[in-house]
Image 1 (cartoon, rainbow, N blue to C red):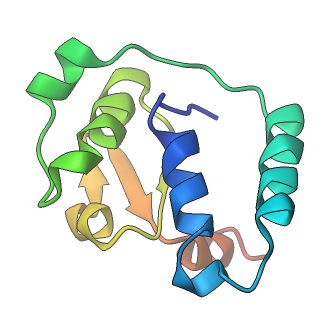
Image 2: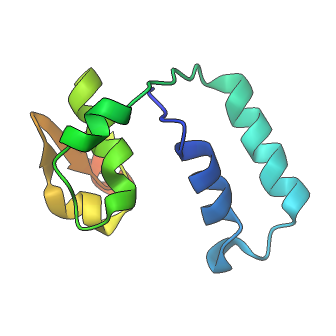
Length: 106
């Protein structure tokens, strides 16, 4: 799993949003800490790659595009509509989590 430096704060912001407001802040933080213990996170410094990345409609997604171009993952999994509309970044497909689960036959 590759996580750009921007991802943890984006996840926290998403979990604090309207869809997840019913959960207490401590519960969100607890989940983030658990994820940090489970996942091995590799930070990639993307300043030069971001400038060269194929831009999606949302310039805030440049770090995801740059990371995909840099490390060539098997798949980019996201719920972000701007990234999903790209369908592919380089040779890497961009998939919604449900689409990935279906593609894996789970």
